[in-house]
Image 1 (spheres, one colour):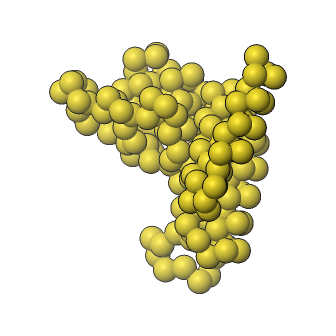
Image 2 (cartoon, helix red, strand yellow):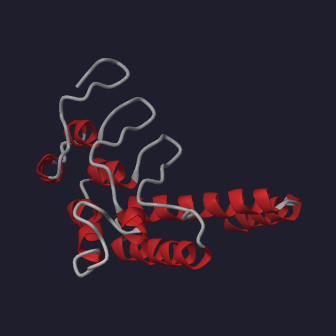
Image 3 (tube, one colour):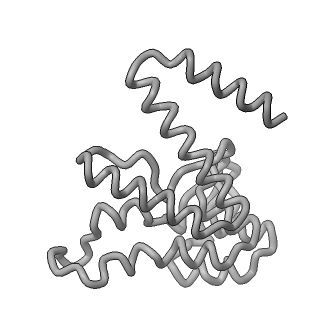
Amino acid sequence: MEERRRVIAANLEARIKTSAEREFYARNMIRKELVDKANNGDIEGIKMILTEVAAEAEQTGCKPRATAEVRNDGGQSLLSIAAQNDYFDLALWLLTYYKDLDKDRWDLLDGEISPEARVFKANPNSRDMKGWTCACIAVFHDSRKVLKLLLEHGGDPNIRSSYNKN
């Protein structure tokens, strides 16, 4: 299967002709890698990728290719994946790490966050494709520690889904 994946990826790369297609492919590969790392609870892997993305965006002056808000095919953010799998450490890191980046920044106004911190910031009320928030997903999957953490960081359990449920 691994060999088949490599052949498919090589064929896809061979069909890329324009810079827009190359950029789309690169963004999609970063997204898939971040989602895989979140499914495995790999905080260091996510940190490494997002650090590289933030540095590249700062260096080029362009929009970052990915953030902590990337989604899987079901529309779940990295934080909702952590809630689903009861990865407390990953959820804590996603909700707090960006704050530490700006701790010693003197050039930012009150309430302002740096472009690097924006790459790492996760929304505790992000929704998946069906409208379920991270808190709803944590409740459904009985992730009590992650739910408590989400509520402490601004997660709203009263937001209704597409099915008008909360």
